Amino acid sequence: MTGQDETESALKLRDSAFSAMENAYAPYSKFRVGAAVRTSTGIIVSGCNVENAAYGEALCAERTAIAAAVARGMRDFEEIAIASESDTPAAPCGACRQTMSEFAPNLKVTSYAKNGKKVTWRLGQLLPDAFTSKHLSGRT
Ligand code: THU
Image (cartoon, rainbow, N blue to C red):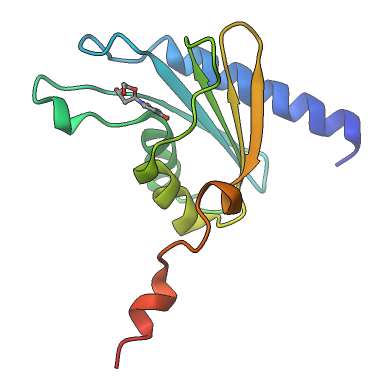
């Protein structure tokens, strides 16, 4: 990808995350979040947070996006964009970091605030020394 294509694809991913945010079901927290993942073949799949009257059953946007992509047969992710209505780009929660790490340990994670602020991390920064399938196979 050239620099220009890279910027264009990042903006497209950002826009998909913001448009998924419009579908968020967040009547309890009133904190709407959207996320969009891009696969290595350039396909974008999005998700939003889905809350529940049983508060602890809330699903985060990042995990609904990843689950939707996996359900469509995609597991090779290059980047995830997160969009929220906060003034500060939202950092993904621990459970979402762990889910990302299952498929893409070095995923590029970019989070956008509504006011245009953004932060980009690599997943290795957000979740160093992750628990992985290697640990499971290390049992004696
Ligand atoms: N939430 C997300 O969807 N993603 C995040 O990265 C942080 C939190 C959701 C969960 C819940 O529906 C609401 O935001 C408030 O925590």
